Length: 90
Image (cartoon, rainbow, N blue to C red; front, top):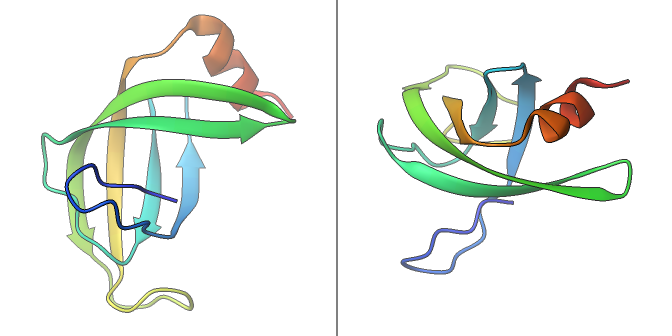
């Protein structure tokens, strides 16, 4: 869930890819490039918290879950190497 500070509306999202440099997710709301967000993900029952910046966002034509459907790529800006390892582990 994405929780914007301004209106406190929860926005469902699906994580598509995670790499050592960032992540990409799909949601029903477009995120403006340059937006910084704080994330908290649960990985194997352990919370991982980090900050990331939107580097691109575009509307996609198909989605089984969201209408409209936006894919957004984020670059990590604050994250520990230990947490990156946890995100990338099986």
